[in-house]
Length: 115
Image 1 (spheres, rainbow, N blue to C red):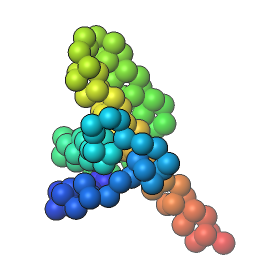
Image 2: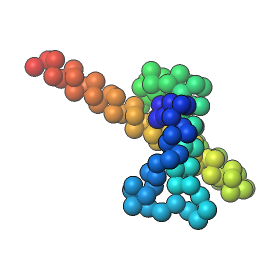
Image 3: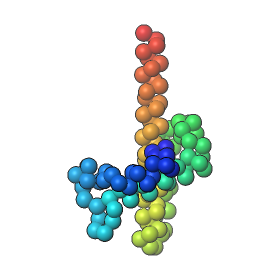
């Protein structure tokens, strides 16, 4: 999970896009995109069970999840529907990265214990 619900309001005060050297689109709060992704991650965790479920997937699974959402995006005729799919794709990518990081950390601990 990226943000706890209590942190969502506070996170709007930060400007992660500018921190990356990028400007927000005209008329948009730069943190809005990241908050939308965080909310989608929270929704996905609630739907699918969070890290324990995520960690059961292979990298190939993650690629398939993203590919499915990308195919769905082609079928969506409006900007808002396409944006919604892109937010889902970003949230899936974050979930996949988090899972890989957890699995890598566990592997490193296991290797260290075997020494």
